Length: 189
Image (cartoon, rainbow, N blue to C red; front, side, top):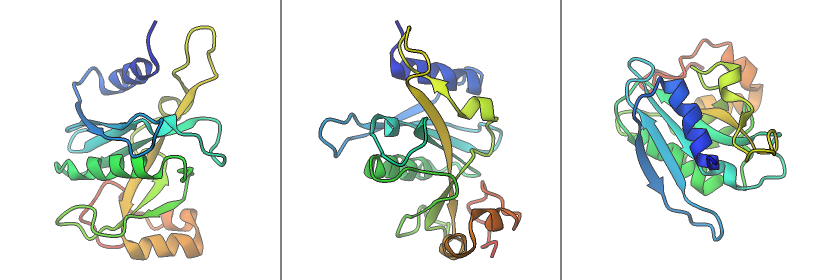
């Protein structure tokens, strides 16, 4: 019988076409919760660093929708520090942040050297279809549909963009035509 993480990794294996990821553990700061793992794919899709988390979904949150969240970041960079930032946020904010679509997270400092970005926004992962990101069943046999994971995108933004989203909403920001994978772009607002 496949474990919860084995089912999740099998899903990611299918999405990646069997490519071998790198794994980075993030130790838990919360008693009773396992650590978070960063699952990192280089050049997937072509030219992008894509990272997924596992462990965020282990924490309960009263405001989260049906599917427990895990995060996905895809950026035009080779610097794994982007994945580490997402893993850090997943571990630090699990149980306190619902990671709902359109919300923002202030990282509080530059996320990576060479980029001016200091925040993230939650959205659909840029390269995953709805069926590939929602309702991933990781429950044991006989309990199908009771343990679902939804993969949520976490993409870097500038502080001024975070403020714009707070004032005007995420849909107004989406209409600016910003590229969520470009970590060196100028602010879209």
